[in-house]
Length: 426
Image (cartoon, rainbow, N blue to C red; front, side):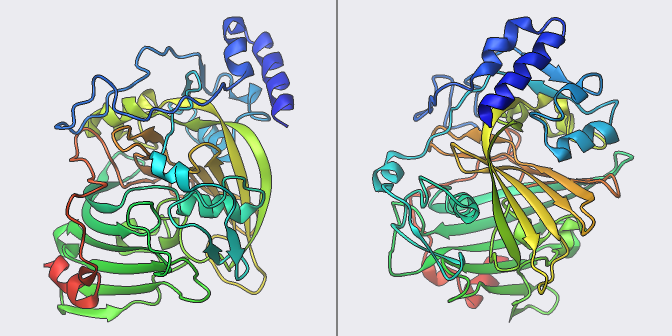
């Protein structure tokens, strides 16, 4: 499949005047060159992640003028729809493929062979802290690799979110979170059976301030379903929240995203039939350092983020289709997910209604947080086609204090209780 795409791409480039000099660059995405330590320009006291590839030049800009040349080869349906919806502003600047993603060596040392899927894919039985499926060969292997990818240990951070309307007006919100991950080589506990524990609270707008949530996520949603609690600042009470799963829509999202779309995809998988569409080459938002270093005022533009700051690369992705089972309910009947073959991050998602009409396109641009090292997204962008609104969640930039991924002082497990949630909310 990849060879066919390469051949087609070469033909397309030959037909495109001025692009003959980049054929060799697109012929091959090259070997992995992970960045495993901070680069020379990095200053741990700042919130900046300098671009290791700042000297790279744009190879090609895909726009309304030429996107049809690539729509059958390296563009996804969601990207094609973005060109058609926003012909005057949407574009994709294509740079050399830099396979820079890395994980701590301790993760690789634990990674030997595939874990086992249990209970129809709802659980994983394997070495805690490893890459669970280093040799993935089915759809849920890719989903679990994304869910259990290395993303810190003892975590504290805050980030804003924005909803941007077609006229450019914005809704601003902000939140704060602490988390304790168990699927890593540093706090690994084979007997606990947990992915991790998370507490979040809304700090803005004031009407939602201190509306807080506690989630305890197991490694097997069939045996131990997600446990969740919410704190209501109006009543000052904590209650169980069994509905914070699947297609529950938090009020702060204004209906644009579901709770199982946080971090790309999370939670139980039993409502879908999962199928592996194979490895493909696609243009994906990657090494988005320029975007990370731009000011928030520069990146928030009507209809979509400022594409001038995004970097796209030709990336090998594992493509997974999720189709709702006949006897199950979810407001998203069909989903297509694109997972990076190197880092296992979800890089893009498309959602479809029951007639297979595109509802939304989502992007998750990643960078290598090379002081860790690990690759994670710097935001989640959701573009809803019916309303032409978009949502930017979990935004990380040089304008925002860094997330602390490995606190020196571990979170006490006793914090992640209903009483702890009440204290955290205040």
